[in-house]
Length: 168
Image (cartoon, rainbow, N blue to C red):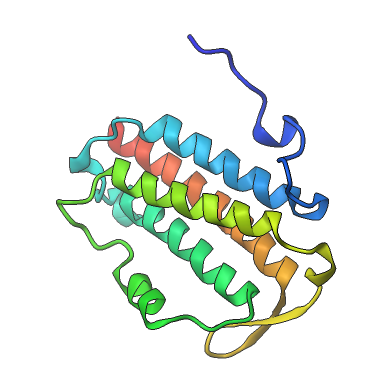
């Protein structure tokens, strides 16, 4: 049996990530570890199961990756592209060709992308104003990055419960 490690936030700083962004990196890496641990060899026939009408494991995996992409776009001061809006519409759409491994790989790529952005973010811009969505709701770079971490963990928790229910 592999040795248990402390949670990611107790392992020290993530290399090259600015101090103020360490909690974001820690949360994303923790989610990634927990998702891989539970979903290794997850049965494809259960990926889109919605017990009691809750969101499926597949939806949560797609949604986490999509939200990270969208929130980074806003943090960068941009609006969503047509491709991002189309991805949003298709989140949770069942497909026999999509496996948990495929969705985990896509999520891994997105988390790697976010970590690279965090490493290259100057802490002096964290309080700069940004807007969100078509309504241009107010936020900041730090607010968007923090929400990326918080939203990821919220959906990770929901996914972990859903996965355990459908596996039982």
